[in-house]
Length: 327
Figure (cartoon, rainbow, N blue to C red):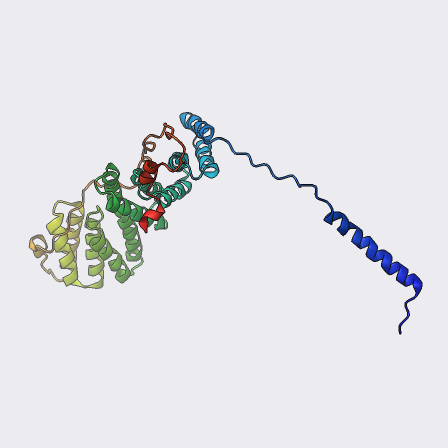
């Protein structure tokens, strides 16, 4: 049997007792711990504070105030109105990403609401206002095009859709301009095959834009530089048939005449007479996308308060059309 010296045994007992004392004290402490205080402002006061900022056109504080309505009272009819107001205020402050996020949140939570067309419109114009020049990446332009098209498909008879159609035409013109810019770059570098692909893309995908006459002219130029006379004549014939009075047609005809003289007097008279396939004509004075910012009115009933907080009101539920209505 191993004998433990008395001194060591006494020390071990003392250490164990010392560790046990705090545990016993903790176990026997029944004093309630203070809880973190959660302050909740009445929804009416929050909404009124937001309206004050709206009257003063303090757009960022206004948006944040409406966000607070939704954060503190997410299940009230006040919150539903506040989401749209927040999206509007962010748009006015040029905070387009935040505006899109708020509009998307409204669409997700209330897709069947009577104000849903407004949310789709605000999302579309927030994308549209971020379109950049043709020399930069065009993903935002494509997103704007998708949002505008979505609005037109869902609410074709609304005023929002009518404005969206105009913006969609300008957006297509912008994308066509990007293709033309790339095509000219390739043509200048002597990469005719690559440039032909870009010019044909404009002619086939963006027939109603103002870039089609130039695309046809550049197509003739590229084909001539490759010596593909038949294709050059065909493109020139389409240009002459659809845009006979355009500056691009006159330049094309002069270019074909010059090429014919260098190539042994080959006749180009048929360019003026060949019918060619008909393309939709583009307006000669098409407006570029860069325009003053779209003026968007506040949401319907923006300055009014909801009649009452949500408390199972059947009428509110029918107007709301929440996500569960899709199942």
